[in-house]
Length: 314
Image (cartoon, rainbow, N blue to C red; front, side):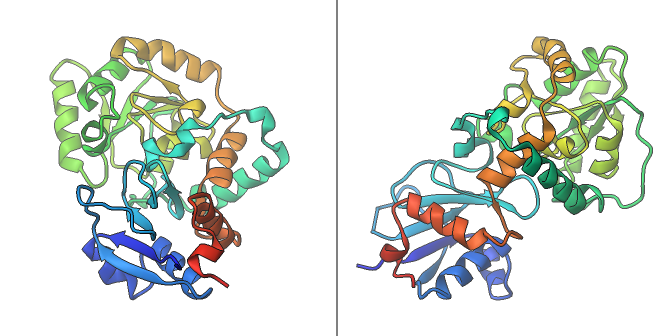
């Protein structure tokens, strides 16, 4: 029997799909329909009631491994995506891969880095709305990026945001500490900064464009923010206080006391940024702008057991 592809999306995404957005799912639909495949649209995903039915299910913001299910979400940079049998972002299968920079083609990586810089760094573009006016940031500062509650809720954080920011302030070794609240959670960020200031520290709060911060800082610090990878575009190393699927590319501190040593290692032993970004995004994520998007998408489906023949594609 020919299998169908079922897209499990939040209601607001289903409403926007008729207009060609969100891009990932409109591209998946168009890729399949153009080849004679069948696509169904469903609101949400019933984890408890899930039963394998012979179709391929793609779940927005999905989690966990199930036969016939792929999890999908943005992969940190705008236009890049996970369509993954294991999970998304910090839980994606990329975290289980071996990263060997020597095995990554240096010439291709350098060209890829230049392309990414043209796409994101030059226009100062990030996933969330950013301040367009250029702001002055202290040179050599440590840049702390706060997030929403997801890392703690998903069990990915090794500590609270307050503990992280306090550890950075305590271990900055004379460097200024700049902290940016998440653009979608400014109140949460302000609350965290106020608590750390009440303990006698003096982090510099800013809502500056993330690229202005990254251009000036010496390193980034977060639980597992996209800014760690955006920092690579500027040649800046990262320290994380949480789990990630790019742990091989950064230094990780699992406790506040471990931060100073992790920072020293990050500064002394930065990754080859071009190879790291090419390996992560170029070789292991889907790029909505790439000519190879359809071919790579269908290869992911085939790896999940749903090749062109099973999906009835021509």
